[in-house]
Length: 82
Image (cartoon, rainbow, N blue to C red; front, side, top):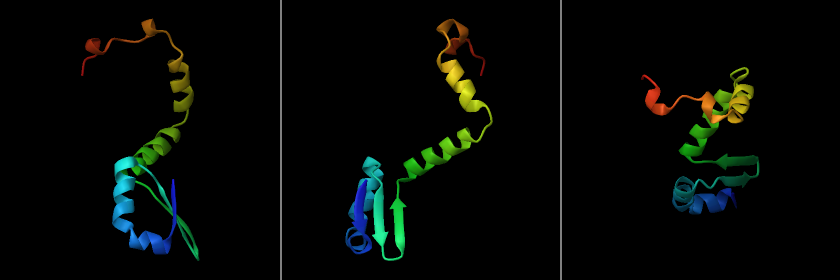
């Protein structure tokens, strides 16, 4: 994570945002009234998806259970009717 203050962020906003987008490196910006984090849209979307999946009751337990299942319990991708 890149740490900066608001003054330096203003001076280098384009470069810092480009780096955040390209490398998914969050920016921690400190100000007199508090702090902020800037993340890439990709990271934001991934975070929202994780929160959504985590909100489904029992899904985490089911995924963990299936993670340890043997391969013969699964259907081959070619056998699935889409």
